[in-house]
Image 1 (cartoon, one colour):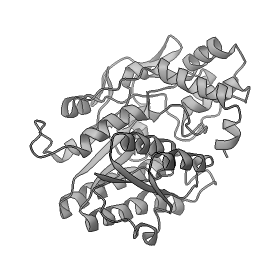
Image 2 (cartoon, helix red, strand yellow):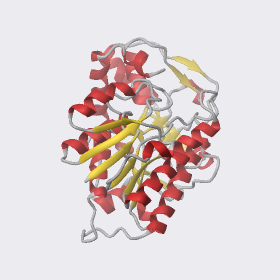
Image 3 (tube, helix red, strand yellow):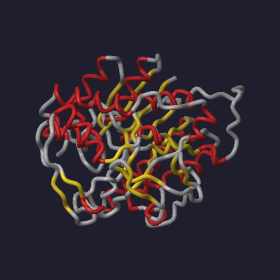
Length: 357
C-alpha cells in the first residue's frame, strides 16, 4: 500500500513513517517545518526510501501532487492546547492548520478513494467534566476515587462528555473528527479516529505543552528551569503516555482491515477509539521528578501557584474499546519510555535548544 502522511517530519509522523516503511509499505509525505527540529528527520526518512516533499496542509495546491494514495494519515497539527490564545499563533491560524488542513486531506481522500487515519487527542474531552472528577492525593499523585459516567478505574472512555469548553485546540480536533466521519460516510471511504494520550519517546520535541515527559526529562538532565504550576504547587497532576511504536501497531491493524476480517466494526462510534498507555502508564510530575532524581541526581523544582489555562488534575484514557475491536494493547511500559528519553537526553545535550523554539 502507498501511504501519505501529513506532518511527516514531526515526532509522531516520522516514527509512523519509519515503521510503515520498514514494514514494507510505500510511504510518502510532506511537512512545512513549522516545528523547530523537524527538519532533522528528513535524512532519516529519505535513508529508508520515504518520498518527501515540502508542503503545507493548509494549501490545496501543495496536496495536488499526491496521487495513487491508498491511505492518508493526518499527523499535521498544531498540538499545543494553548495554541490560538497564547499570542504565539492566532486563533485563525490554529483552525486553518487543524481543521481546514484536515478538510484538504479529506478532499484528497475523496479524489483518490483513499482511507484516512486521523490522529486526535484526549483534549476533545470537556474541561469542566474532567475537573469535576473526584480525585485525592495518593503516593504523590492525584488518583480517581469514585467512578462517574464514562470515567472509571481504567480511565475516561470515548463516551465521556465533549461539551465546551475544551480549548480552541480541542475544538479544532473534535470538529475534524466529525467532519472526517461525515466525509467517510458521504463518499464511501474508511475513516479511523485515534484519540491519543500524551505521546512520548526519544526524539520528541521538547515543549512542555506538547510533550511533557520529554520536556521534563531533558530539562532535568541539563539543569534547565522546571516548575510545578498550579494545583498548590504540588506537582500531583497526572497524565498517561503512549509510545509512537504502540500507536503504529494499531494503525497497521486499521489500514490492513478488510471486509472479511473477523472483527465487527460497523457502528459509527466504533470509528473512534482512545489510544493510550492507560493507568499503567500514568504518572504525576512529582513522580516523574522522583524518577529523574534517580537517573540524574536531585535538584530543586520551583513553584508557580498561578493556575494555567486548560491545565487539568487527572487525565487518563481507557483504551478498552481499542482492545475489544482491534486486539490492541500498548506494549511499552512508562519506565521504559522514560529510560529511552533519558538516553536520548544524555546523547543529545543540545536537544532543548534545537527543538523548543
